[in-house]
Every structure is written in structure tokens, then in C-alpha cells.
Image (cartoon, rainbow, N blue to C red; front, side, top):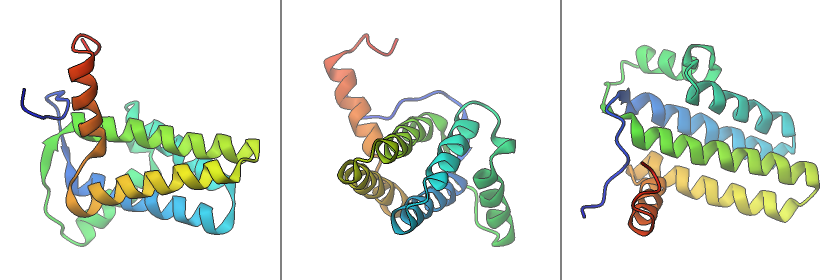
Length: 147
């Protein structure tokens, strides 16, 4: 079985999703520096807007589209499955950071943030999707689990 990302046969612009990733990474770093949990709550809501079909309401999506147009960055269309899976992981990480913040478990916030930033940086700079690798391994263990 060849290693592959989940496919949903709908295309998204990978350039825009990478700009989105840069904004989310910046938000996580801003939270780590400032300790302002509202940043994590904003990121969680923004992820939810993008994941559940109301992208036009997402400030990060709108600014990313504006930057792409303003800088005349080329579109690079990819299947949305991998990007959606990565976003699901992203919302999980950001929500976990917010939860650990409210529970006062600083080491857990930092650990989750480091893992998220590492995974997001791999995708942003090298196009290497950890979520796709996890999907592939899970599919091998539970072949009927995603059908």
C-alpha cells in the first residue's frame, strides 16, 4: 500500500493554507510570549470557521487571500483532504493549549505548543505533513476505521 494522504476530491489553494499556517504559528508564539489566552481562543474559533464551511468569516483566511493577491503569489491547487486533516490536528492542539492554560498546567501548554510548532513548521517549510503520516499508519492498523 503506497503511503498517501486522505483524499476528498476537492481542491484548495496550498499557498493560502501555508499563509494560514504562518499566521497560526505566529499566534501560538504570541501566546507563548504574552500568556494571553484570548489568542488561543481566537485561533480555535478561526480554525472552526475554516473547517466547518464558513471560510468567508475567518479573519485568517481573508487576510491570507488578501496577501496572496497583493503579492501576486501563484496558486497551487492540492486535494483538500490532507489540509483538512492537518487543520483538525491544528484545532486539537490549539484547543488543548487553551485547556491546559485554564487548568494551570504550564508544562503541558509548552509541550503541546512545541509539538504543534514543529509539525506546522515541517508542513510550512518542507511540505511534510505529519498528519498524513499518522493517517497512513492508523489506516494500516484500522483499515475499516475511516469508511
